[in-house]
Length: 317
Image (cartoon, rainbow, N blue to C red; front, side, top):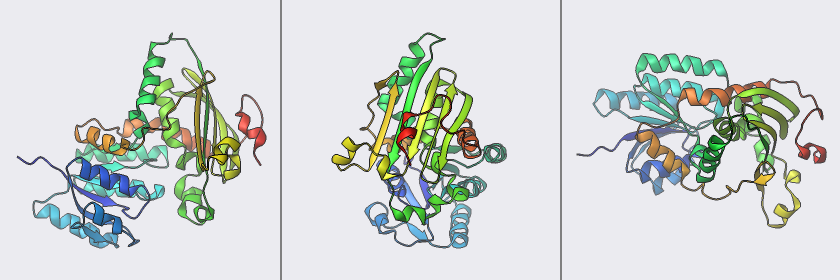
Protein backbone atom coordinates (compact mmCIF):
# COMPACT_ATOMS: atom_id res chain seq x y z
CA UNK A 1 0.00 0.00 0.00
CA UNK A 2 1.35 3.41 -0.98
CA UNK A 3 1.22 5.71 2.06
CA UNK A 4 2.99 8.65 0.39
CA UNK A 5 1.51 12.11 0.85
CA UNK A 6 0.67 14.80 -1.68
CA UNK A 7 1.93 18.36 -1.22
CA UNK A 8 1.32 21.82 -2.61
CA UNK A 9 3.88 24.58 -2.13
CA UNK A 10 3.28 28.34 -1.97
CA UNK A 11 6.33 30.54 -2.58
CA UNK A 12 8.33 28.12 -4.72
CA UNK A 13 10.56 30.85 -6.25
CA UNK A 14 11.91 31.86 -2.83
CA UNK A 15 15.38 31.15 -1.45
CA UNK A 16 14.24 28.66 1.20
CA UNK A 17 11.81 26.77 -1.06
CA UNK A 18 14.44 24.38 -2.43
CA UNK A 19 14.95 22.92 1.04
CA UNK A 20 11.25 22.14 1.13
CA UNK A 21 11.30 20.64 -2.36
CA UNK A 22 14.22 18.44 -1.33
CA UNK A 23 12.49 17.44 1.90
CA UNK A 24 9.29 16.45 0.08
CA UNK A 25 11.27 14.34 -2.39
CA UNK A 26 13.65 12.82 0.16
CA UNK A 27 10.73 11.67 2.31
CA UNK A 28 9.23 9.85 -0.66
CA UNK A 29 6.30 12.16 -1.24
CA UNK A 30 4.88 14.06 -4.23
CA UNK A 31 4.37 17.71 -5.16
CA UNK A 32 1.11 18.23 -7.07
CA UNK A 33 1.13 22.00 -7.48
CA UNK A 34 3.13 25.12 -6.69
CA UNK A 35 2.43 28.84 -6.65
CA UNK A 36 4.57 31.95 -6.95
CA UNK A 37 3.98 35.30 -8.62
CA UNK A 38 7.56 35.07 -9.89
CA UNK A 39 8.14 32.50 -12.62
CA UNK A 40 11.87 31.81 -12.15
CA UNK A 41 11.14 28.34 -10.86
CA UNK A 42 13.32 26.13 -13.03
CA UNK A 43 14.53 24.50 -9.82
CA UNK A 44 11.29 22.49 -9.90
CA UNK A 45 12.76 20.44 -12.79
CA UNK A 46 15.31 18.98 -10.39
CA UNK A 47 12.61 17.72 -8.06
CA UNK A 48 9.08 17.65 -9.48
CA UNK A 49 9.02 18.54 -13.19
CA UNK A 50 5.45 17.26 -13.57
CA UNK A 51 3.97 19.42 -10.82
CA UNK A 52 1.50 22.08 -11.94
CA UNK A 53 2.66 25.67 -11.50
CA UNK A 54 0.63 28.85 -11.10
CA UNK A 55 1.49 32.55 -10.90
CA UNK A 56 -2.01 33.63 -9.86
CA UNK A 57 -3.43 32.66 -6.48
CA UNK A 58 -7.00 32.47 -7.81
CA UNK A 59 -6.10 29.77 -10.34
CA UNK A 60 -4.04 27.89 -7.78
CA UNK A 61 -6.94 28.04 -5.32
CA UNK A 62 -9.36 26.71 -7.95
CA UNK A 63 -6.96 23.90 -8.89
CA UNK A 64 -6.49 22.74 -5.29
CA UNK A 65 -10.26 22.79 -4.77
CA UNK A 66 -10.85 20.76 -7.97
CA UNK A 67 -8.32 18.15 -6.85
CA UNK A 68 -10.13 17.84 -3.52
CA UNK A 69 -13.51 17.43 -5.19
CA UNK A 70 -12.10 14.72 -7.48
CA UNK A 71 -10.84 12.74 -4.49
CA UNK A 72 -7.20 13.72 -5.05
CA UNK A 73 -6.98 15.93 -1.99
CA UNK A 74 -3.75 17.64 -1.00
CA UNK A 75 -2.40 16.39 2.35
CA UNK A 76 -0.02 19.27 3.15
CA UNK A 77 0.51 22.84 1.97
CA UNK A 78 4.08 24.04 2.47
CA UNK A 79 4.43 27.81 2.88
CA UNK A 80 7.62 29.69 1.95
CA UNK A 81 6.16 33.13 1.26
CA UNK A 82 7.10 36.53 2.76
CA UNK A 83 6.44 36.66 6.49
CA UNK A 84 3.40 38.92 6.38
CA UNK A 85 1.58 36.48 4.07
CA UNK A 86 2.06 33.40 6.26
CA UNK A 87 -1.13 33.95 8.24
CA UNK A 88 -3.34 34.17 5.13
CA UNK A 89 -1.70 31.18 3.46
CA UNK A 90 -1.99 29.04 6.59
CA UNK A 91 -5.69 29.92 6.72
CA UNK A 92 -6.03 28.90 3.08
CA UNK A 93 -4.41 25.53 3.81
CA UNK A 94 -6.60 24.77 6.81
CA UNK A 95 -9.80 25.77 4.99
CA UNK A 96 -8.81 23.44 2.14
CA UNK A 97 -8.75 20.64 4.73
CA UNK A 98 -4.97 20.22 4.60
CA UNK A 99 -2.29 20.47 7.25
CA UNK A 100 0.14 23.37 6.89
CA UNK A 101 3.93 23.43 7.06
CA UNK A 102 5.17 26.98 7.42
CA UNK A 103 8.55 28.64 7.57
CA UNK A 104 9.34 30.89 10.51
CA UNK A 105 8.22 33.30 11.69
CA UNK A 106 4.92 31.50 11.65
CA UNK A 107 3.07 34.83 11.95
CA UNK A 108 4.07 38.36 12.97
CA UNK A 109 1.69 39.01 15.86
CA UNK A 110 0.74 36.98 18.95
CA UNK A 111 -3.01 37.37 18.34
CA UNK A 112 -2.61 35.74 14.92
CA UNK A 113 -1.63 32.54 16.74
CA UNK A 114 -4.82 32.57 18.80
CA UNK A 115 -6.95 33.02 15.67
CA UNK A 116 -5.18 30.14 13.92
CA UNK A 117 -5.76 27.92 16.94
CA UNK A 118 -9.47 28.56 16.52
CA UNK A 119 -9.34 27.59 12.83
CA UNK A 120 -7.35 24.47 13.72
CA UNK A 121 -10.13 23.55 16.13
CA UNK A 122 -12.80 24.19 13.50
CA UNK A 123 -11.09 22.21 10.74
CA UNK A 124 -9.34 19.48 12.71
CA UNK A 125 -6.13 20.23 10.80
CA UNK A 126 -2.69 21.17 12.15
CA UNK A 127 -0.22 23.99 11.60
CA UNK A 128 3.43 22.85 11.69
CA UNK A 129 6.27 25.32 12.13
CA UNK A 130 9.83 24.71 10.90
CA UNK A 131 12.11 25.05 13.94
CA UNK A 132 15.11 23.18 12.60
CA UNK A 133 17.48 24.31 15.36
CA UNK A 134 15.47 22.20 17.81
CA UNK A 135 16.63 19.18 15.78
CA UNK A 136 20.33 20.13 15.65
CA UNK A 137 22.45 17.59 17.60
CA UNK A 138 24.55 20.26 19.36
CA UNK A 139 21.44 22.15 20.47
CA UNK A 140 19.75 18.97 21.70
CA UNK A 141 22.91 18.15 23.68
CA UNK A 142 22.90 21.62 25.24
CA UNK A 143 19.26 21.23 26.25
CA UNK A 144 20.01 17.90 27.91
CA UNK A 145 22.91 19.49 29.78
CA UNK A 146 20.68 22.29 31.07
CA UNK A 147 18.04 19.75 32.17
CA UNK A 148 20.70 18.01 34.29
CA UNK A 149 21.81 21.26 35.97
CA UNK A 150 20.63 22.39 39.38
CA UNK A 151 17.12 23.83 39.29
CA UNK A 152 18.32 27.25 40.47
CA UNK A 153 21.34 27.51 38.14
CA UNK A 154 21.36 30.55 35.85
CA UNK A 155 23.44 30.40 32.67
CA UNK A 156 25.07 33.43 31.02
CA UNK A 157 24.54 33.48 27.25
CA UNK A 158 26.03 35.67 24.53
CA UNK A 159 24.28 35.23 21.17
CA UNK A 160 25.86 36.84 18.12
CA UNK A 161 24.50 36.37 14.61
CA UNK A 162 25.75 38.48 11.71
CA UNK A 163 24.70 37.65 8.16
CA UNK A 164 25.81 40.28 5.67
CA UNK A 165 23.26 41.29 3.06
CA UNK A 166 23.84 43.25 -0.15
CA UNK A 167 21.94 46.29 -1.39
CA UNK A 168 19.20 44.11 -2.93
CA UNK A 169 17.98 43.25 0.57
CA UNK A 170 16.97 46.83 1.30
CA UNK A 171 14.81 47.03 -1.82
CA UNK A 172 13.05 43.74 -1.07
CA UNK A 173 10.14 43.03 1.28
CA UNK A 174 12.66 41.89 3.89
CA UNK A 175 13.61 45.50 4.67
CA UNK A 176 9.98 46.52 5.23
CA UNK A 177 9.21 46.06 8.94
CA UNK A 178 5.49 45.77 8.19
CA UNK A 179 6.20 42.79 5.93
CA UNK A 180 9.17 41.06 7.56
CA UNK A 181 8.95 42.14 11.18
CA UNK A 182 12.43 43.65 11.02
CA UNK A 183 15.85 42.24 11.85
CA UNK A 184 15.00 40.54 15.15
CA UNK A 185 11.99 38.77 13.62
CA UNK A 186 13.38 37.89 10.21
CA UNK A 187 16.80 36.53 11.17
CA UNK A 188 16.50 36.15 14.93
CA UNK A 189 13.32 34.25 15.66
CA UNK A 190 14.79 30.74 15.33
CA UNK A 191 17.55 31.66 17.81
CA UNK A 192 15.06 33.15 20.27
CA UNK A 193 12.88 30.05 19.95
CA UNK A 194 15.91 27.84 20.55
CA UNK A 195 16.94 29.76 23.68
CA UNK A 196 13.40 29.76 25.11
CA UNK A 197 13.13 26.02 24.34
CA UNK A 198 16.33 25.34 26.26
CA UNK A 199 16.31 27.91 29.08
CA UNK A 200 12.63 28.64 29.71
CA UNK A 201 10.19 31.49 29.27
CA UNK A 202 11.05 35.19 29.03
CA UNK A 203 10.88 37.06 32.32
CA UNK A 204 12.46 40.34 31.18
CA UNK A 205 12.97 41.76 27.68
CA UNK A 206 15.16 44.84 27.15
CA UNK A 207 16.14 46.32 23.76
CA UNK A 208 19.39 48.30 23.74
CA UNK A 209 19.74 48.95 20.01
CA UNK A 210 17.25 48.93 17.13
CA UNK A 211 18.28 50.01 13.63
CA UNK A 212 17.24 48.85 10.15
CA UNK A 213 20.39 46.73 9.80
CA UNK A 214 20.99 45.58 13.37
CA UNK A 215 19.45 45.10 16.79
CA UNK A 216 20.66 44.12 20.25
CA UNK A 217 19.19 43.53 23.66
CA UNK A 218 18.94 41.50 26.83
CA UNK A 219 16.60 38.66 27.74
CA UNK A 220 16.15 37.28 31.20
CA UNK A 221 14.88 33.72 30.88
CA UNK A 222 13.92 31.29 33.65
CA UNK A 223 17.39 29.73 33.58
CA UNK A 224 19.55 32.17 31.61
CA UNK A 225 20.61 35.76 31.14
CA UNK A 226 20.97 36.38 27.40
CA UNK A 227 22.82 39.23 25.69
CA UNK A 228 22.01 39.16 21.99
CA UNK A 229 23.26 40.97 18.89
CA UNK A 230 21.87 40.53 15.36
CA UNK A 231 23.18 42.30 12.27
CA UNK A 232 23.00 42.42 8.48
CA UNK A 233 26.04 44.73 8.28
CA UNK A 234 29.22 43.26 6.80
CA UNK A 235 31.27 45.70 8.88
CA UNK A 236 30.18 43.90 12.07
CA UNK A 237 31.73 40.58 11.03
CA UNK A 238 34.92 39.90 13.05
CA UNK A 239 38.17 40.40 11.14
CA UNK A 240 39.19 36.73 11.48
CA UNK A 241 35.99 35.67 9.75
CA UNK A 242 36.39 38.33 7.03
CA UNK A 243 39.89 37.05 6.25
CA UNK A 244 38.38 33.61 5.62
CA UNK A 245 35.95 35.16 3.13
CA UNK A 246 32.95 34.64 5.40
CA UNK A 247 29.84 36.78 5.09
CA UNK A 248 28.10 35.06 7.99
CA UNK A 249 29.19 34.75 11.60
CA UNK A 250 27.25 32.94 14.31
CA UNK A 251 28.30 32.42 17.89
CA UNK A 252 26.61 31.19 21.05
CA UNK A 253 28.64 31.31 24.24
CA UNK A 254 27.31 29.58 27.35
CA UNK A 255 29.14 30.66 30.53
CA UNK A 256 31.82 32.06 28.19
CA UNK A 257 32.29 28.70 26.42
CA UNK A 258 31.57 28.54 22.69
CA UNK A 259 28.89 26.09 21.53
CA UNK A 260 29.95 24.76 18.14
CA UNK A 261 27.01 24.28 15.81
CA UNK A 262 28.28 25.60 12.47
CA UNK A 263 27.86 22.20 10.83
CA UNK A 264 24.91 19.84 10.73
CA UNK A 265 22.41 22.19 9.06
CA UNK A 266 22.26 20.47 5.66
CA UNK A 267 19.42 18.03 6.21
CA UNK A 268 17.48 19.67 9.03
CA UNK A 269 14.50 20.56 6.83
CA UNK A 270 14.25 16.95 5.67
CA UNK A 271 14.45 15.82 9.30
CA UNK A 272 11.74 18.37 10.15
CA UNK A 273 9.49 16.88 7.47
CA UNK A 274 10.12 13.36 8.74
CA UNK A 275 9.00 14.42 12.22
CA UNK A 276 5.94 16.22 10.84
CA UNK A 277 4.92 13.15 8.83
CA UNK A 278 5.13 11.13 12.05
CA UNK A 279 2.79 13.59 13.75
CA UNK A 280 5.62 15.09 15.82
CA UNK A 281 5.83 18.55 14.23
CA UNK A 282 6.17 21.76 16.23
CA UNK A 283 2.77 23.43 16.36
CA UNK A 284 1.15 26.73 17.27
CA UNK A 285 1.67 26.30 21.00
CA UNK A 286 5.41 25.77 20.38
CA UNK A 287 5.63 28.96 18.33
CA UNK A 288 3.74 31.28 20.70
CA UNK A 289 6.57 32.31 23.00
CA UNK A 290 9.12 33.31 20.36
CA UNK A 291 6.47 35.21 18.36
CA UNK A 292 5.53 37.18 21.49
CA UNK A 293 9.23 37.82 22.21
CA UNK A 294 10.05 39.28 18.79
CA UNK A 295 6.79 41.26 18.77
CA UNK A 296 7.82 42.86 22.08
CA UNK A 297 11.32 43.55 20.73
CA UNK A 298 9.89 45.15 17.59
CA UNK A 299 7.66 47.45 19.62
CA UNK A 300 10.10 48.30 22.41
CA UNK A 301 11.81 51.63 22.94
CA UNK A 302 15.61 51.08 22.88
CA UNK A 303 17.32 52.11 26.13
CA UNK A 304 20.82 52.47 24.66
CA UNK A 305 23.98 51.31 26.44
CA UNK A 306 22.37 50.68 29.81
CA UNK A 307 22.30 47.60 31.97
CA UNK A 308 23.84 44.31 30.87
CA UNK A 309 24.24 44.75 27.11
CA UNK A 310 26.08 42.86 24.36
CA UNK A 311 29.68 44.05 23.94
CA UNK A 312 29.30 44.27 20.13
CA UNK A 313 27.21 47.40 20.66
CA UNK A 314 30.40 49.28 21.56
CA UNK A 315 31.88 48.61 18.11
CA UNK A 316 28.85 49.22 15.93
CA UNK A 317 27.92 52.36 14.01
